[in-house]
Structure formats: structure tokens, C-alpha cells
Length: 295
Image 1 (spheres, rainbow, N blue to C red):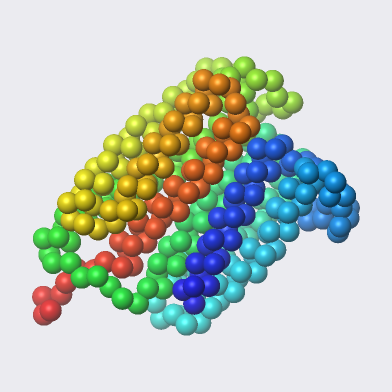
Image 2: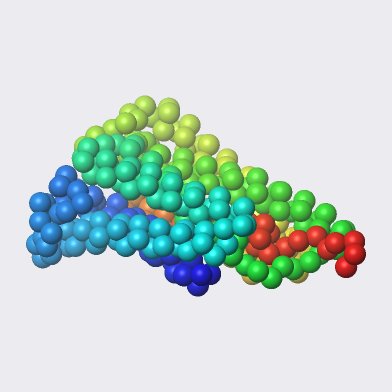
């Protein structure tokens, strides 16, 4: 069941990357509003690459829904007595339903500015939950003595604060982009705007960068402790590196005004970072435990 859970998580990751490609290539309206079909057809004209990208993303949704449903039901059936598996399985189904509804409404409403932020939010939360569900299926535990457990717990609390802030930062970044506040800040014309005030656009951008600094500091703190106690060292390094790469790409977007290619890379790295962060949390919550007094 654990392997199937990992497969479901991987397909979810691919669906998010494909969705990002839809945004990057401006293909969201290529299939019109006849969701879930494309321009009213089951097999549309694939000579237009925008149609190919958008329809591929639409077809990914039922596949993801099927895998998520089987994954949740299978996990519940095999591990129904484990509370964490039960909660995460039900949560994954709930998030899938909400994400599918939001995605459908987004298409039917003609992709109104800012609305895609909800799609991004539910998609990222679903990815996190699926990663955690995969870890919750672990049977073997790593035991730590009381001193190590206390120190590790403190470092993970710091990480949890930083990662929680990172999740909010990603949502804020999605809102910054899809509300067209990024267009206002970079002086790039758009067809529709949710935010037209330059002062509000600057405020959102400033909050985004302040959060980046705090998140990186928390990641460095976690890396120091991970290196000291030799746990999650690789993931700690990958997490910090992905955060730094994201910051660099974000800076490139502002300097060059490239909101197509660079912002696409920015979102892909953000999604990878989300998987790494959720893996760190999953490892702590479901693979580590305090050594009992008797042992």
C-alpha cells in the first residue's frame, strides 16, 4: 500500500507541474468553458499546442481522482485502526473534491483574476497530505533517547514554524501572480486585474520577501541541528537549497520582468520544496519516537 501511496503522490506532483505549464504558456482558455471536455469535443484539435497542454491537464484530473480514491480507501482498509491514517485519508479525499470543484469553476467562469489562487492552495495542500499519508504507513520506528528527543523536538518545532510560513508564502505568491499584482509591480499590461493599486502590490511583494528571510533562517537553524544529530541531513540540505534557488529565481523575475518562463520555474521549485518539507515533517511525525523507559 505504501508503494501505491507514493505513486499517487508522484502523479499529484506531475499534475501540479502540468497545471503550472498551463499557466506559463497561457493555455488556460484553450479548451473554452466546456469542462471537462475541450471546446465541446472529447478528441479536440491537437495541432494547437495550447489545446494539447490544457486538455492533458484536464485528463490528468480523473486519473488523479481515481488514484487518490483507491489510495485513501486502501489505506483505510489496511490501517483502519491507526488514527493518523484515517484522518489523512479522509482529508485527502476532501481536498481532492474541493480542488476538483475549484478547478471546474475556474474554467467555467473563464479564469477570473485571483481565482486560480484557490486552485493552487487546494492542490498544494493535497500534495502535502498525500506525502504525509505515505509516511504514516511506515511500520518501523527509530527510537531516540530522552535527551535527543527533546533537542530534536525543539528543532522540528522551529522547522514547523518556518514550513508553515512557507506554505502561506506560496499561497501569497500565487495570489500576487494571479491577482495581476505582479503585472502592476512590473508594469506589464494584463487583460483583467483584481489588484490595480501599486501600493498594495508593493505591500504584498514586501511581505513575500520578509517571509522568505524568516523561512531561510529557520531552514538554516534546522540544518545545523540535523547535521549535529545526524538525522534528515540530506532533506535539510535539499530544503535549504531549494529555498535559496526560489529566492534567486524570484529576484530574476523582478529584475528581468520575465513572468512566463521564470515564474514557471519559480512555481516548479516551490512545489518540489513543498514535497521536501512535507517529507521532513512526515519523517518526524511517523518515523521517530521517544525510547520508552523499559527499553
